[in-house]
Every structure is written in structure tokens, then in C-alpha cells.
Image (tube, one colour):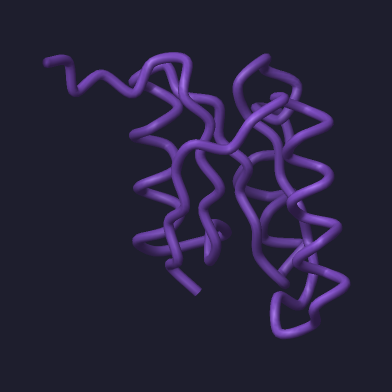
Amino acid sequence: MSFSIAGKTAIVTGGANGIGLAIGRHFADAGANVMFADMDEKRLLEELGEQADDSNIRYFAGDLREKLTIANLLSATLDAFDQVDILINGA
């Protein structure tokens, strides 16, 4: 059995700082596609702005307490990576 996350897709909420940011970066370094989600768009840009052009990193800013925002996050992730395998709720 393999525990590799290479090629898997993860959504990480609370991804602009702290544990969410650290987990997301670790997953990306291990070869996973990562969608960093947080309501602090400025912080997402500061932390991931240049890296977001990489093939395995994207970010999404929005208030995940709203159903429409959750639907938009899922849609953006599927548009970018075609699947969702892992969900990390750090928010």
C-alpha cells in the first residue's frame, strides 16, 4: 500500500497562514495539487502570489461560511485540477 499524495488534489482551508499554510506547502512539496482557501486575500497573495503560477498551486479567497462561496471553491478546484481527493479544514 502506498501513502503517497503525489498527483492527489487537496483543498486546504485557512491556507493563508499558520497550520493551514504549512500543511498546504508540505502537500505541494510532496507533489500534490493544492488549492489554498482563506478569506484573507491579501495574505494569500503575499504568501502564494508568485507560487500560484506553479502547476500544482492555486488559491481561492472567500468567506467559507457562505454556501455559494463553498460551491465556488469546489468549482474553482475542479476547473484547475479535475478532482478533489483531500480536504484539510484549517479554518
